[in-house]
Length: 301
Image (cartoon, rainbow, N blue to C red):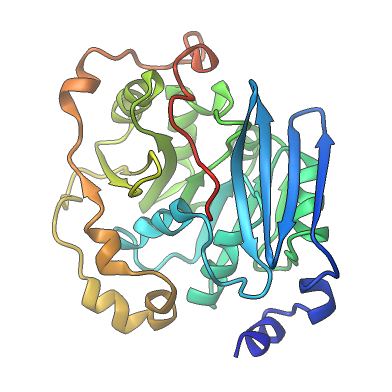
């Protein structure tokens, strides 16, 4: 069955199952990267400040398996906008999320923006990603893309980590307002955060300055928190999602993502922690100086 799925995804067996394990290091203008294959799993990691941080991982024998736990939680967007047709994702990695998305939503399109050309190259040469009309990739700065592109997005996902932190200009009130202007009226802004850091509270305070509603989903045991935010005040995002209906309408999504388990990952908004935080702006965005690396992705296996 796995081989049939690979053929359906347009992946040749020779491309998906290379002959041997490997470890490669690549230093680019933007990243210090490690790409490693062990068995059928390929990991893309960023080296920074004496450590390595998992950016993406793909099982070449089963590309629809979400190896990195938080990529599953990104699908919390479906609990708030269940029928996306046009999605923007800032940050490509190995495109593990993308493969499940196009499987779950066969009529939809996911546009990616990736700053580092080497990441895009490795996603294809080592992680078997085959971009097409439904999964196009623009190699450029994510904020510049949002500013220039005039499309409207049902989901706008920010997952642009560089060695454990998101570039400061993608964390500000001004940028979030630019994102909100590119979202449909029922659109969802989704971002990957790290709980327990100084940056976490500032992130949430900044989102609250732009979006009337922000809800959080905790990735068990990983330190990641996925925030979903919308432009509308009603209906309340706190209402119980129609998981049964979502499963019925989108069985391919339910096949790959435990939607009931995902809904159960929702956590309370930490009002006390956020109360004294400062809003990040283009003039005040000390992202790299905050304790942003206290917790991060670890090896997924």
